[in-house]
Length: 327
Image 1: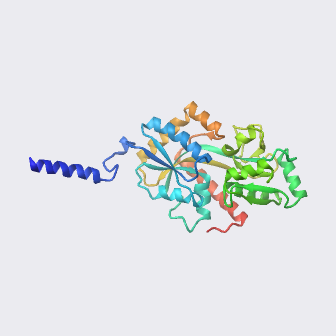
Image 2 (image 1 turned 180 degrees about the horizontal axis):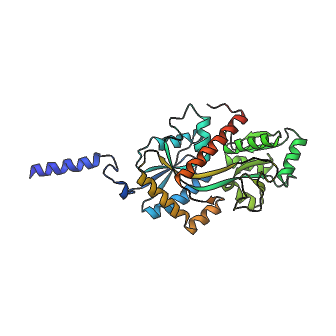
Image 3 (image 1 turned 90 degrees about the vertical axis):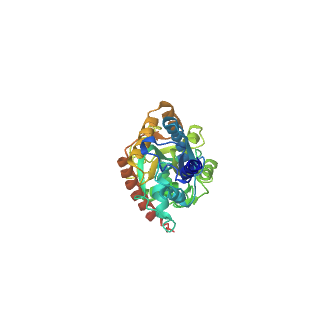
């Protein structure tokens, strides 16, 4: 009897001390809440979109998806947490262009992971077009007006951005380079501050992701001139692309998606992909994403990987044009 009790206690202790999920098969996943790491601050576009997607995926999979904001070093801190976590599906990455393609190229000495080999792209869930906006009191009614002014007044155009090396900075540098104009690129502490500067007239122009700016455009606080996508955006079909408006070859758009540690079981990757695809089919989820200024979509992991590879090269080119020296 005593021997039986001791055996029972030892068995219980072994379960407690075993790694969580050690006895769990991929087929039973998930049996506990999933940690969804976002490498940007609360209120950012990727944070807002991840919360929408995480809520619906949690409903579909029967477990809560808890957003964990881990900011710093251009998104590389949050990325490192995911890259070095257990590949059991319980720590995944709400990944955006900045954290995947920009941070690792700017903070090379801080990166402790391979931005390609250490992640398994699951699927994109949104495209976030960059929108070129100006203060509504400026005389700029088109991209042509903006370029003409800059050429006639070299260096007098104040171009706001969210900080040196941020997506808005690199997109602005690429625009001025390709348009053959000069501008003073003014860094602010975050997207909110840079947009506030343009709204107040302190700076005249910026280019930022649609989720950050479309509310201001609708309210008349900013005037939108063009989008940075290859084709016109579904969220603002009346706006021309920058290419249409006179800067051939200019492309600047962002995206958001889910990734997992690279060694995550294929069965778990498939469950995450299928749940995300079902979430994107949900009308309420789609409407919430569109309200944020995003274009909802689902892709295969291979398609997402190809987009990552393409855009990381593009942002690498922008970093070289900007003259920023990686740390």
